[in-house]
Image 1 (cartoon, rainbow, N blue to C red):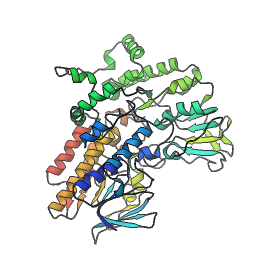
Image 2: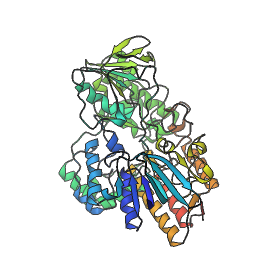
Image 3: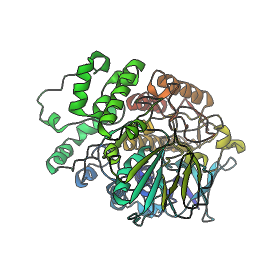
Image 4: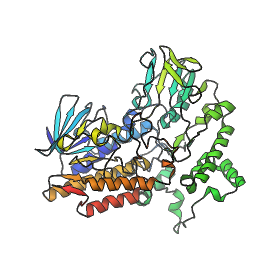
Length: 539
């Protein structure tokens, strides 16, 4: 079964790939392991799952009609609403006929003699195409750490990244949550309201701040809809692909004056505390020097710790929730709803694994070094094998039998997060070396799919059968990715984040996303195309 393009994954990247490639006259087929579209938002159905980008910004810009007709119920929308958005796109643009669901890719092999990619699946089918696009997402392979005795537990086991479609009834049950990353922080307040008892087993406390919990007001949404072209332009100029547009800007008769960057070191101790009382923990994220200056970062970290002590009534619990050993900006910023207040509930207990580590999981619960906890349900909120997990698990083999796992044994190598030397005509969407998770993902996805589509048409228009990143360009780009990350909190010696793969045992430690900002990155991609793809080998 031969196509022009095989796309792996029917998340937002896969959906836009169908729309874009089809318009370019390409025959496209999408293979999806799930039973519907949505990707991350299909699998992550856990209570409290929510986007950390404003809804009107976490949206596609390719269709003005789509922008005007879709209504977001909240400023920061929840998983069901984002999944509805994905399904609406698939229906509105007639994308479903191009997708084969319940089909997991088991191998992706390059046939050099035919210049074709052969994609094998668990349905025993094989698909072939000149081009293969891995739209597998950055957060799509759940991480479940190996814990002694985990198969002995006779109760219910859940993972936030593989939450059941059917409602889970936790009423009257004793629930243990392992992990306090983004998914854990979002789920814990919701689980606490449902469970009879909730035990939070925390290895590393996080820096989390309250999310905007407002419903979307019709008049505010209308202002955004009237200014979407301005918003899209501002997104293209913003390092994180977010416009930061405010309704008040639409009424302004003059352009806003550019203010000096706010620096926490320029404020007195009293001024810092006053701002924290007025604006809450979110204020600590607004100072530019917090992300690049160790002293400024320490000031913010100490203020954060003091505020947790104010928010959490039990002093011992408060101390357990304070991040130590790394600073604000090391990890992806977490947004929460009532997270710290949840630990003031009588039915919630924090287990600090730094002081009381898990020894084993038993038939009836979890035994730590100091206690045994009887549980009916264990929830793993242990995150993902981020950015590369889905690619390395796809069994990709390139030119000369080179396996991607072999090429990446010391860390991922890719040029612009788009192509990999040794793997002709294979493209990755928001791959390692691109802004990806440090950016508004839908803006990054549109830019990547547009670039890939234009590249494929360039090849066909010029009777070129293949394209492959040059290894020297790949290595130069990796060096640049690491260079721009230096001097930020992301790469301080104390920072062990999933950006580095630090949450996966045995995974090489290399900083994967591009910190230089979306506009700078996009310009580099545009330059690569405008030069006639001189960073690539064409054949």
